[in-house]
Structures are given as structure tokens and as C-alpha cells.
Length: 161
Image 1: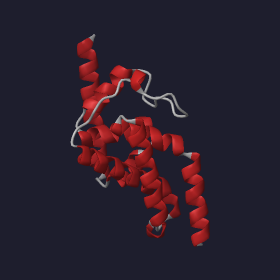
Image 2: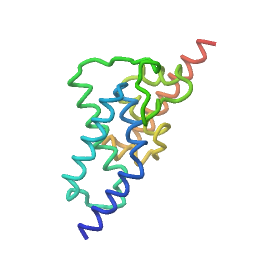
Image 3: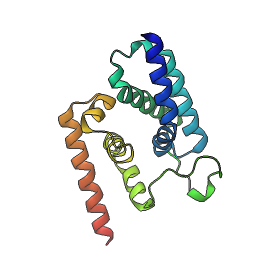
């Protein structure tokens, strides 16, 4: 059974590595730090795979690890540095931010707990229930924060027009 779980985890990681990078990049705004965060999350997941009780919860379990790694890096850094897209290295990974950089900047300007929920919902297409599992907050709080974030985004975008 453990070997089957390890194969499933490995397949999940290989299939979704670009998504993991995109999520990490949305937090860290730095190519190398995002790649490091993904690598750290993969290592932690492989080390802690025995703690995964339900194989169906693999997706939310891994996203929780990745979000925690990103938040740890941000806490260590104590500040967020925005990097313009033209300053990024041309590599195998392209800029994962949405095409509308104004919207991406507005999402980044949201409070951290609200921004996390918006990113997981719309960048990673997680369900509200999965977001609740990833963030460890009740479903009703996820809904409230998502609604609050979307309302703030709409107000700031409308005020620009």
C-alpha cells in the first residue's frame, strides 16, 4: 500500500509541477525562490508521505505544504519584492502571472489571507472545500474571504475606470 501511495504522489508531482511553480511564483515573485519552494515542498511531501491518511486528499495536502513553504520564505524575507516581468530569466518556465498584470497586482495588494484564497480559487482552480482544507480555515470563512477579496478587486478596478 505504501508503494502505491508513493507512486501516486510521484505521478501527481510530475504532472502538476508547472502549477506548483505558478502558485509559488505568485507568492514569492522570484523565479529561483519559487523553484526552491517547489523543491522544498516536494522533499517535505516525500518525507512526510506516511502522514497522508487519505490518498484522495493528496491535492489539498500537497498544496497546504507548498503554501506553508512559501509563507515561511516570505516570513524569512520580511518583505515582498516585486520583479518586473522583463527582469526575469528566459528559461523553461514562463511568467506564470495572468495576462492582466493590473489584476495580478491588485490580488497581491489584498491582505495575505484573502489573497491566498483568491489565488487558490482562480489561479489553481481549487474548490472552496479544497481551499478550506489547504488553509485550515472553516468553509464559511473561505467563502467570506473570497467574497471580500472579489468585492475589493471590483471596487479598485471600477475606481480606475
